Length: 506
Image: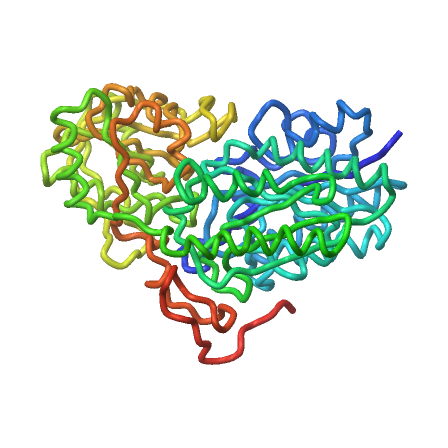
């Protein structure tokens, strides 16, 4: 029987964000399932939208024996601590070594992990796994569409396969694609040629949505180019908030011959570069966005949905800035917003009880320039223990734990307050505190794009607002120091020139 060692370790790192990812953050998981080890991995990783879950289903259909190591993920934030990285990777490597004879390794990774001691977290993971298994055992990994892919990652893996949707509704599908590719490698007993291209400009995440052009057409073309000669081809937009050498978009292809791989990679790279002018669009200030939403809502039959993109916890925000809440209140909007992550305020609401009024310094606790706690008296409308299922296309049925939570109201604005952060990308993240999202005039979600998977069908109009937060809608506003020389810090933007040599792994 074919024996495959499997594991997962996912983190998207915003090196400009205020809060690092500790070991405890991976234990809890945030929007990811809680950390699991050994046989429990195969119990948790089923029927959810995760790369490892898709791989497990496909592997079992193939009759493979799976040897699970560890599965861990945490909500995006600043750097992964050295302690967290070393402990989790040690468990992964120890599990692979203890597995005995294996035929291959599959890993579910993100591709944009930066740690306190390594700029290229996944490059280091793959290097250590490769050292443990030797050069002859196939090693395949799934990656996020936002992966900042490095030459070292490509070198150590036999194949990297990235998601093709943003919102990421195909995470499990990507795990299944990895299983198909691994079956091909195992059957042939041969490696494929690799081609890797890094593109010359950063792209803001708000314009990476694959529901819209030009991304939609790029991925359609990418799928059309796959063939027996090029079994898999990926384009990763990159995560444009990691101040490292390899930040940015990339293309990676695997072909029967080097010429096959090169032609496919060059074709997609040229297509992406030809659309440089198209990776842009309107972004509103908080007041502009709220006033426009109120105007549109007056005649709309469905909610106007606003992305509070710069405090997106899926991009490293702490999910507690108050800029959009202030704009809703001062403009007299009828709206709901969330999730503001503030354990202290959630505890105070629970202590006060449903129906009580409570004066709070809500949110604003991360020291973001231009942001501060919002002092206001709120009505406590509903309380929750924070446990629910998120059935929408992005979370895909995950069990969520937001900790003690509340619906607070000021005027006609309702606020979801939780004790843990997770991107508001599912309608259930309103309903669990008693807010029916389809009945609201305006919804303000702390998200950039993932919310669209579940909210676009119920929305009259989608808007993007830029309130103060750690994930700028325009990457050119970030204080870059260690990008690779020559890359443009936005489409058609200025070229990065380092003041001093960049740090490397070590």
